[in-house]
Length: 106
Image 1 (cartoon, rainbow, N blue to C red):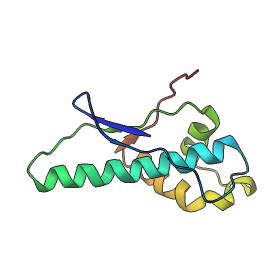
Image 2: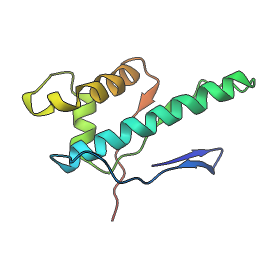
Image 3: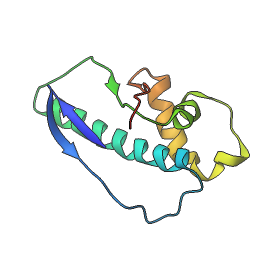
């Protein structure tokens, strides 16, 4: 993931996962959760130094299944192993702190 602030890259990360994912949606979803965690940390850091913003966090994702998982409030057997990440992201979407738009990639 990459985090931009004012059009400038301020945080980036590319990491090989320690856990084997069962699907690309699961892998993307876990990456989104890590990115949102970093975005929240950055937002708190900026607030601590007096830079407050009402703008929603926007995390672009290129996996429609991961986006659907985030926006669907229904629990499924196939997603129970990612429930902590799911609840974390879902809380941010429900509180209108986060939007998760689709971005096509090559």
